[in-house]
Length: 203
Image (cartoon, rainbow, N blue to C red):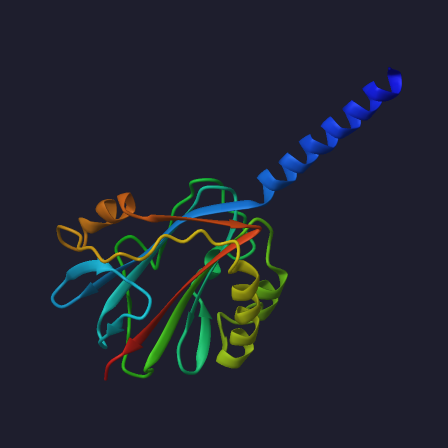
């Protein structure tokens, strides 16, 4: 009877440990990119969109579990870490990041025909990303894309991704933030989640 009791305790302890590990490695975040184009028409950016120079965008990331967040913008020549101010910091649950800020936009120019915005959320610090952007916020594109391919491959099976359905946000640019926040999509991954938006710039 004692041996059976000990066996039960060991199995039960292992089950609790397994559940705890899985709970710790689950990464969830609400993500979205607000696009302002055509005389301040506000929509959500979708991958494979065709845009024009002068179109503007604002990035929203809200981790639902404590996470390290990396946002990288890649054009024809280089990759830039847009989230450099939070590099190395673990963001607490429900902490909202708006890039570049709640009142500003990034703007697409006419220097590149293809651009990519990549959002990575991880339970632990990504030493490789930290190392790549240690000395500068921008690095040669080739230095980033090979490692990004590894991230995409490892995260592909874990990502729970709702389809990007187009919708239009009512109101002007300044009033759109709250509306956009309420419509952010939820993504879930194990250890990390990865979401990218590839767009074409029409010159």
